[in-house]
Structure formats: structure tokens, C-alpha cells
Image (cartoon, rainbow, N blue to C red):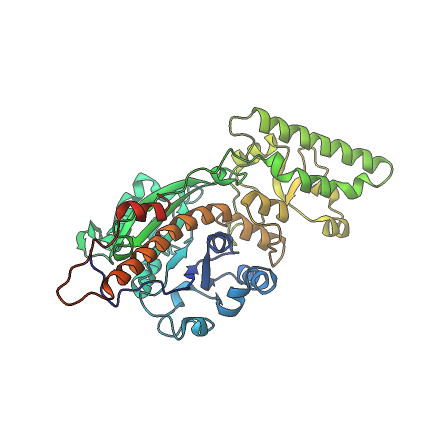
Length: 435
């Protein structure tokens, strides 16, 4: 394989850059950030989620690069035009506008309702299907790598033709065009699709049953003879008891410090939750992890923890799934302590506790009212899973950069007519890529 002089590469000292669409409240952005990617743009249509991104990036340690260089765009991704001058803040770090082929990663958790088992599974016929827009952005930006996250339902047999079409658009091949249903040969955009992998969040330290389908595609000139390796489980599942024990104690503590019946009641309720949650951790086959959090949508009422089956699973963990609790101050102001903490079927979760179940860091704060906050949490891609996939992608990109730099060093001083060694030693490349 031969690289031309104008093949996009990482320059010396340059960070791995990313653009993310459908960024939500930042679950995927947090994970990719932890994997070493620096965001040039985060695009999100929901005003509360966009405000969450703005407020956290503005204030948290470790996000100074994004404070200076990342555009947080509250708007419809269909109207997002990153080229030629759609990104404003990154011009200084890039030395000008972002150019086609220069971005390292385009990522996005496109809306899941078109493919979710909880919905009608209309797929391409659902107005919320943003795969076509994602593919257009891939064509526009030609990033070195692409990462798309969705629900497991997209792997169902009924969507096999649509998956084949998406793959053909990226890497070429024959597939049915969704608009017509007729087979067509697609040239592709020069990528190799590294399969659609279903990753289970509980394999990556998230105390929740949350399978997500992830597509990774890497540009062929970047991948070369390297191999992308999917991340594997990082350890035993973390139970809800382990994840929430400290926060549950903190929620009951103000009442335990009171005298009289309320303290007795608080101790009884806390002990009951501890017993049910710890018993589930010790005895349940899944290790006492939570069912999938369901964020819901603006079209469907207030926040709760899912359908009847999910509520029953939460009950086994000592938690009421009938709604989302107020925090202490709000509970006292609205007089909802009995509803929030002292229910016969156990306490309801607060937004903060739901965020723990989703794998968010404790310092990440959410904007809007309680329902808006919970929807941001419930619809998120768990940060630890995004980090694991991001690390796998980053390993390939860095190995490819090292390979390209070696090739340039080998060819820099060659005389006309001289040949060069093989582009790279395959074993060495694979070691650098973590294979």
C-alpha cells in the first residue's frame, strides 16, 4: 500500500479530534473525551441537554480544551453544516476551517425509537431516523473513523436490508435502496465496516442491563493492514447495591438524625432496601444489576423507570419504578418524602441515582426540570461503554499515524529510482494498535 503526499494524517503533537451529532447530555462525549478525543463540535437539538453540555464544559476541570475550541450547537442536525465554515471556535487550533478528510472521528447516537423494541419499529419510515443524515455527514467530512450507536433492535432480522444499505454506502457493495426497495451497486465512501457489535453495558462496569448496537467504520487508507479489535468485558458486573449504597444512606441520613417515629421509619426503610438489594446482588443470576433505564420522550407523559416488566425488576432490587424522586430539599419543600422515600415498595430513584446507574461521573450535572433531567439520563449512551469503544478506535488511529510517520521517514531521503521497505511491519503495527 502506498500513501500519497496529500493523504490526511495526524501531524506531530496533534490531538485526536471528533465531531458528535445527537450528543444528548454528553454520555458518549464524556466517554470519548476519556479515551483521548477532543471535541470540535457537539450537536444536540434538545435545549435542556444542550444547556447541560454548555454548563459542564464551562465549569469542570479537564474540559479546558473544549472550552476554547468546541462549538456546542443547539439545533437540528439536518441543518448542521460543518464545512466549509460551520465550526467557529476551532479555527485557531486548526489553523483555519476544518477541511474534508482531516477529522479523526465522526460519532453519534442517532435516535433509537425507529428501531426500539419499545416502539413501533418503523425504521427508515420513522421521521426520527437520522441514519441518512449521518451518512451524508460522513460523505461531507470523510473522517478517519465513524462510530454510530443505537439500540440492539437495529440488529433484528427485519432491518437486515437497511443495515446492508448502510454498510454498502460506507464500504461499497450491493444493497436495496430504502426509497425504492430496488437493489443497486454502491461505490461506497472508502471505509471498512468493522461489523455491528452489540455491547452490554454491565460488561464495562455499568450497573445496568443495557445492550447497545455499535457500528465502527474506519477509512481504508487509515486502516491498511491494521485490525480494529472490539473491547472486551472489563470485569464482573457491578450491582445496584454496590452502586447506590452510599447515595441511599445519604438520602435517609437527614431523617435518621431526627428524633421519634420518622427516624425509626427511615431506619426501617433503609434496612429493607439494603436487604433486598444485597440479596439480589448475592443471589440473582445477573448479579443484581438494574434493568434498562428508559428515558422516554416528550410525547409520553412524565418520567418513570419503564414498562411493567422493568418495574418488577426494580422491585426485586428494593426500588419503586413508579416515578423519579425529588432530592431532599425539593422533597421537603413539596412535602413528597412519603412518595419519594417511604413507599411500601421501596424508595424511588433520584435523577442523581439514575445517572449513577447510567455510568455518569458524579460531578456531571443536568439542566432543566426533574423530568427533563431524567430523560437526558435515561436516553444516554453509558460513558464507560463509549470510552471502551473510543479507546479501541484511538488505538488504531494512533498506530496508523505511527506507521505513516515511519513511512515518511523511510522515503524522505531516497534518491530517484530507489525502492523502500514494506510500508510497515505488520506485527509491530498490531502491537501498537493493542491487538
